[in-house]
Amino acid sequence: MAEGFALDRAYLDRKREQIRRDIAYARYRVGDAWYKTPIVSAKLLESGEIEAAFIIDHTVSGSMTVTEVELREKSGALIGGKSVRITRADATEGIMYVIRLRLFQAVESEGGSGAFDDMQEGAPGS
Image 1 (cartoon, one colour):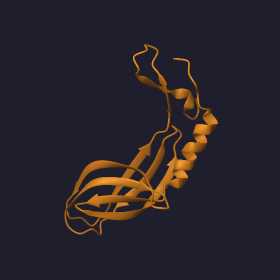
Image 2 (cartoon, one colour):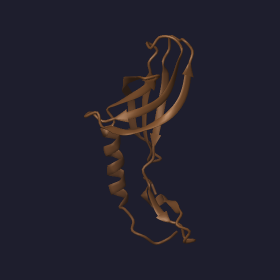
Image 3 (cartoon, one colour):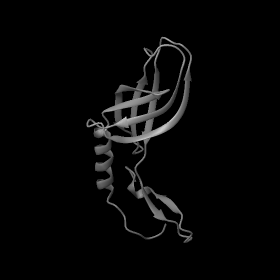
Image 4 (spheres, helix red, strand yellow):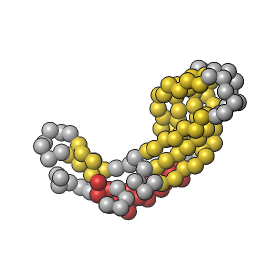
């Protein structure tokens, strides 16, 4: 592994926990409409990933295709989002959607190609 500046493991752990705490709600897009939905759970996994789960609500009537999902802070600020394509026939049940975020440190590859590798020392338990 290439030598380089390394962020402290405890610092990265605190940032992971801060991101987990910042997750307040999710939104999903159907057509031109956005729907706000509460977070069912937000937790820090043993792997160091931040996992947030929410339900794409069954009360949206008829068949639908979700095209985007987002996580938001309490202030409404965007944490992050993703384009998706989730099609659901008319149903009486919701869809549980789980997002996993990974915060890690990257270091330049030893080959000098300009590529970067995962620096596992920044992950919990390493």
